[in-house]
Image (cartoon, rainbow, N blue to C red; front, side, top):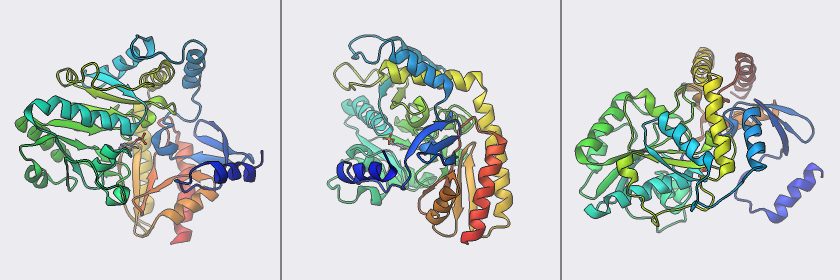
Length: 394
Ligand SMILES: *Cc1c(COP(=O)(O)O)cnc(C)c1O
């Protein structure tokens, strides 16, 4: 099948709700992907941080192959081993809560919103405070939680019970709390909002406010979690713990899986019948995710992410001094945003033509999220392509 034949299939049969680049990808290995002409691309975006162990990581592929030959799905009215093992990995590497499994980030956040309401319904509390420029997903509840008007356009009426406040503004949070508020939901590092890092003091004070006012602190770690920042979860940089945390993106290194973890006393409110997911926690996705945890541990990838993040950050900061089009470089670990003074789409496009995959978010921010096992030479190569492109377009 030729490239134009593939694209024609989409034109005829796939709903055009995405702006797609005219490349047909056929194969991936580690930090590289190949198109159908055999052109190789260096992938330092990892598909929104999904392929965090690189494409077709051998440990994950092996786990998928073995599990696929053994048992792919059984409904949640029975037990399967991979789901239990995965829950243990998540719990023991975070705040010792209990997990609910689903299939995406939006569903994980939807679950968190439902749990927050269920846990507080006897008190008549249901409102959740979220942050400007947040991103929590595309279901009606999560798009309402997402405080960005561009994503909500045309979808009215939205869900009741969400209040928006500016990111990193404690007085605004305190002002927004009323007697119906049951929780505060926040990404410790905003991804789609342009790689905005929560202040240390802000997060600490949020935890204090939640304790004092009996609110649930819900952390959306769908993008920032699973080692991206050099620790398993971004909140671990803040010396606090959430009441609820959500995961997805890199959890299964490409297999569709989402998870919500809640402190045991909160988790109790999710009683049989109150919530469910047909595919949630299926053996195939959970076996892949267990392999993700095992690989992060056995290959020391938290450390590598921290070291490579520092290396990339220093290189970027260095050439930012020579390139006035760079306004700011920010992030934690391998979750880095390069804010330009101009729109970033052209630069990202030019990088792609030069064989480097990056992403543009929030109009003028280039998002750099290589796999956690990235090596110095990949970073050097990618950043020199980027540097050349930024010199040329500005
Ligand atoms: C991508 C993302 C989501 C939504 O995840 P989906 O799997 O696309 O539903 C939610 N929250 C954050 C922080 C994300 O980055």
